[in-house]
Length: 461
Image (cartoon, rainbow, N blue to C red; front, side, top):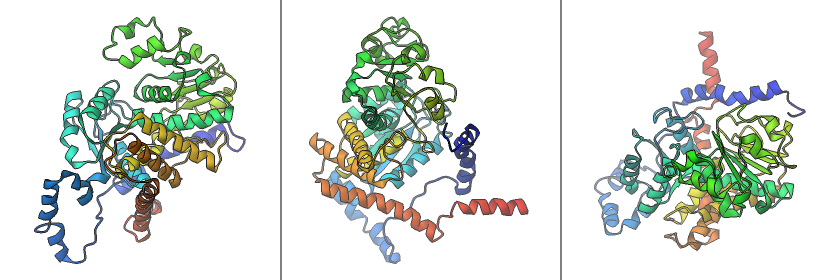
């Protein structure tokens, strides 16, 4: 609870994006469209950009396929692939109902990272069919962003595609969420004066997002024996026979049972949180999934990231009422947005600019450290841990860090120094934003305020 706003005012503010969403989506009929990137001087240019002139770039690519990224926009274009089986907190709503999310993701890719992205919602839920579909489209895209695919098949799809494809394949719910969570955690621990290896960390939720967070934070140096993972049936521990019986389908959960929770805590989230320093929750949307009373059992100066979408497991002011010092959510309308939108635009910008073959944990850690360092440079506090979505410089620095790490790991097709990487990222990101703003200025994109005027006119009529 803040001194400036009542609980009712906070709840009203939190519900405003949902009230506006249908209106604006209907007004614009979606959020993305295809635009030209070349000048048409007159109709004679059609002979250059299409037949007969187009035969020359085709022949050049036939002789050397690497030229496709030089002669076309393929290298700056990625596919956002989903089967609609795990959309936000809505669950298995299908590929058509999930399309607005993928289109929204494309908007963020373009506006924040200068990356062209195409939503591809597939009419299948079968793992092998999804894998085959993605492999079939590889010639058309410079990278693949897997999105909102149900756990645990999302991991088998990701792992196979990373192994079998020669372009970067990434699962944003897994790797993107983990990257930004780590960035926020790095700075939160600095504020409270704790070291990651000394912290008792509780992961509430054992699905794709939290499994990704666990993997990356483990790689960063947490003590997994001091960690506890909680699923819908309680804490994971060595006595969970139900997990042992399905370990082939859920290998990560079985690993958590064996290696985490050295104190062998049995019970639910309440027991797990006793004395915990950090809560990372990617579970059932709230409010009311987590209570202030559960938060009150945590250690002094507790850190809580409650990141369920579209509504966090507990309202942030209730986390503070429970005694936590730092709280973050996945939403942009609350302080400390711990959301993958701060990660994927800059990370893909970096891998595209060096034509990387993959996205590794080391690249994700480099991105997290870059985001954290950017925020520290401009100043952090308990309500301002990491970069915000309107801070383009953070994405530029993130892209440079990822591009340099890709080269260091020998995964880049191009050798590009940090200065040139910065120039490329800055140009692409600033151009994307300038183009969008220019289209509004000249009236080719209607200002959102026109929606209000049209509603008023309709009401009068």
